[in-house]
Image 1 (cartoon, rainbow, N blue to C red):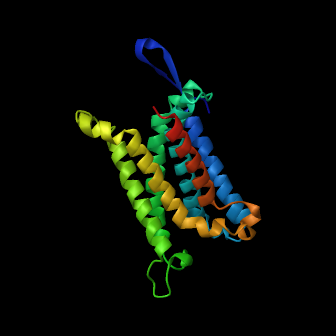
Image 2 (image 1 turned 30 degrees about the vertical axis):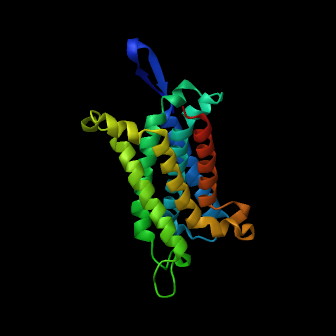
Image 3 (image 1 turned 30 degrees about the horizontal axis):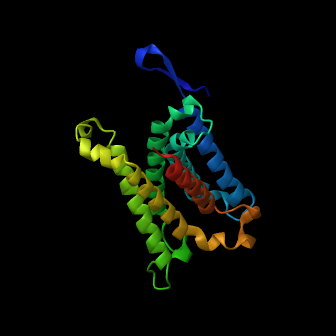
Length: 223
């Protein structure tokens, strides 16, 4: 799949690798989920359309958002980043948000004791970790929604709103909320490598590690 080519100011061509990156990240994320849970794990294939696909979408969302937040700062730190990747950042962020929305909707359909028993008390109420994870996830979704709203034409005249929502502080806050959702959702499984299917780390751990790396890069290199 070739990168898109668009015309920039003055007529010069500006390569955009967004389609290639998005396709590659999604394929890699879904492949990891299938390998860990279906091929090396005990999850039956009947659960692929919703349960496993949701995990792949979740990982892809966090990877795309991490790229969106960290490519520019990584370049500022002296890292080698192709111009086509830098041009893809907006598309990666908006696609990551779309994947988050899909993840939220699919998780809503799946979130009950029969599927996520460890997040429920015997009386059917949520555990503390589940409540904190859900709170972090909802808050992160709202923050990302606000960020994507900043690209809407009718909001661009509100300079104060745009300056705040695209600020470094706001972006780091969004990263922390997403990391909190991942941490409280899965950290108990991270500490039990003997239970990892095929020795592969849980998807929440992989996403958290990538997100943490993106956070540090963003913190050190964002101008």
